[in-house]
Image (cartoon, rainbow, N blue to C red; front, side, top):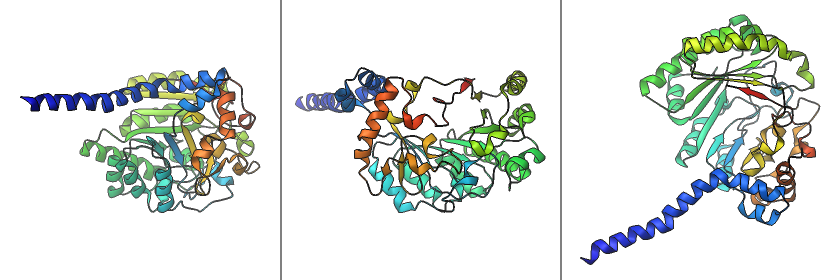
Length: 367
């Protein structure tokens, strides 16, 4: 008779030690950032330091190689092209960040060009880390498609044109027909494997060379079986300012875009317009996220790691190097502390004033 009671006591003890911790962790993850911001906002930094989250989300630049020369991309002006992050270095990064839950293996390069791309995804998956991949989708095979469908949680495909002429004028070096067929085939493979992961989204960067094809893009996406579309206003820097489209011109397209999307059964339509800044205190980056470049450089956010053009080298925004510096010292260091404090107080930090991000330059999200 004593054994069942012992088992019950063991179960209760496990709940008290593990179940309650799990429950608290889940609840705390939802509210912790706001609690931490409250502490920083009112100068109670010693409590802010004690409660802020470890690094849970990472964007890591696994390559600075790209097979295209897109008109709106910083890659054209990058001074460190043609380099891959080694697989050993990738594993080193993951080992140093044991609390990671989300990984985006990309920066100023095409991730599928990396020879160890799928090994990296498998490594992340083995550690229960969700993966988000942005690709031009020019590199394709049946085998790659099957592995992507299984290993990727979110797949974003850059398709900034709905005709051969426009697409190939924007994504220089790519074939419109080939990429469209790659998407069509991937959707078929995903369906055959009955994979609920690999949620596919088409991303269309709005510039003066393609704004007239926004409506056509919605019809194309529906024809391909893609139910998620994101139209995103250009992230400008000096060399590409002439590609920017006036807000009124985009506005003319939006009404019809929404109407067609509804008719075609598009599940999620996102329209990002650089119109008005979010409050800087909404920025989540210094409270749980980092960007790491191909050399191991650590940046407080992706906007400071990319989007600069040739006149502003991104290295000036680097906080350290994950291979040579203590990542915990960086994460808990004075620079990060200053960022957290100013952001929590709704002040734009000096380092962020030039950043091309939605919290500084502005974005209006319409869904």
